[in-house]
Amino acid sequence: MVVFVVENVANSLRGELSRWLFEVKAGVFTGKVSALVRDELWQYIADKVGTGSALMIYSTNNEQGFSAKVIGNRTRTLEDIEGLLLVKITSD
Image 1: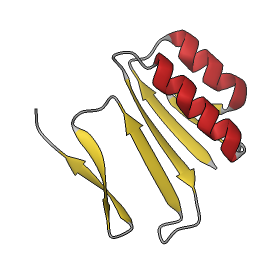
Image 2: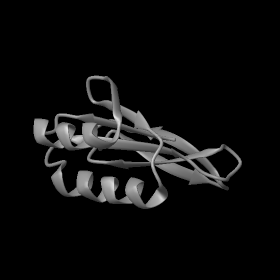
Image 3: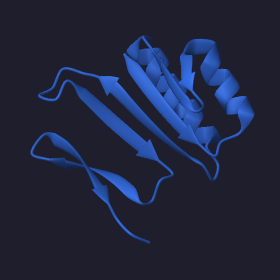
Image 4: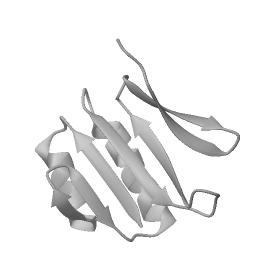
């Protein structure tokens, strides 16, 4: 299972994601794809995000049962503290 959340991105990027995933709400995509497809989609998003932002949450075999990546959002960063993924909120 994978979830992508994109904000302030081109409609063409959202259109490409909708070819592979279900858009449950504006900018929120979810589905079940292989790890290869997931990584290729993340690379595509990274190339096309521009001034927007994106978050990817995906199932993995760890203590929390998921992992995440973020790109473009400078107010929220992901911190790995002894294998536990936490969100750090900073002010500009």
